[in-house]
Image 1 (cartoon, each protein chain N blue to C red):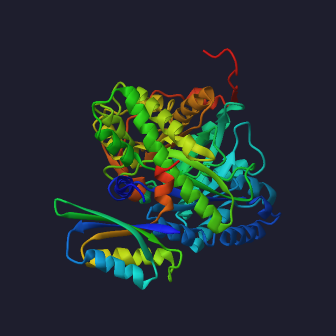
Image 2: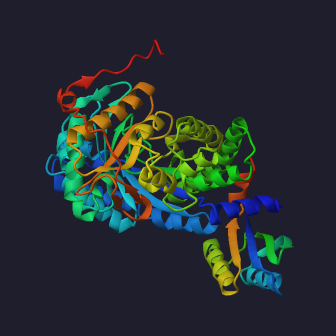
Image 3: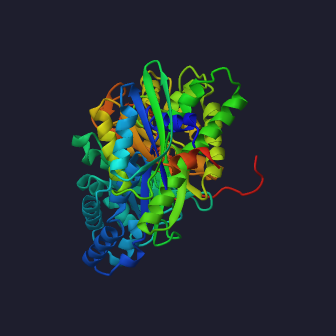
Length: 89
Length: 451
């Protein structure tokens, strides 16, 4: 089972490390990362494996979101099915 | 790996363009709750609803968090209560109060189904239920009522139409101290669908399974934003773009419906392919029509543009879902749509134009505020006109009219929240009293010789 973590906000040092650490804390494995910086706005998309996650995915998602607001960035962890269903037939 | 553009598109739709699941509605049959004693009926109703729907809200919240898609309303639709009252007799308001207790207990936003189906005539329980609607809507907060007074197969029950004009007025008068909220929870239908997840017309039809999950999607903002990016397109390409956007919106509804159905252990019923506006800026159906370059919703050309929009939404949505149903189409509730409110306020949008629009889109004269002194027979006649459009065109039409007691044209009635606010709109005052008082039945239309 996979999920997509998106991080959008003003670029800052260590953001990739911080998000990856949060994932590791919950046994969430990072599979792929892509990132771009457009006019100082940092956008990172992370594909992660949540098969062995140690909390409910909904709680993980809420934790990431509140961590995002702590550091002034928008962080969303969403189940991959939402993208699959919308963009693939 | 996903395409980054696709991921960001989905996220923008949700965060900036108001994409949401408008409602997850659990349909529950109450046929097995009918008892010869109304108090026992109430007990059984309470037990059944609070058992079947106990996890509805928590499961929806869970889906919301995991998929990142907001689910605005969690609702329940039940068997038309007139059928339940038919067995027990007694005061139907007792059941309305029981439904309110159920809504409070399970935490849903609305329970629909305080309803009667009288398109061909009144049977046991129907008249009692209809006459109790004003009180039922006044003593409850989250219960919706509906009455089906016509169909393409049965024609229009003019006695019921006459009665409903009076009921709507009484309902407004009883709730005059609360912005006439009563009739905002009451809809009069022709060709009512039995699997509709949207209020106020939702009820659980007799042909439905014992319990079912129906989902209504939304997303006027997404369609408008998609059109903003391609202003040079001709109208054929506009229709294509709306289809593609509707497909994406509906896929989301299908996913949520399947997930909710699986987690609750309840069969999936239908996805309602709808464009349902809210009063929020950027979530308006009228603004989509204006994006197709009408100067304002209500101008000449509105009916044509709306016909295109409605058709494209259905064509795009139908392929995205395994089962579709409900009302399916673009909604035009005046008080719930920022663009409609503006157009009605400056007079571009009239009730007569809205009536024409209802011939080509979902539902009907919806959430329209009319002067507080509008006589019951005028309300009935508006209902009859609207029902005739549905009957003759083999589609659902409805009237949800709110007489603003103590207010006149130029005033505004405000409900707040999703129900919004709207200007009091002028209605023709020439009296249809004699026509409405004739009673009887308008025969069903021919199925052949169509021109």
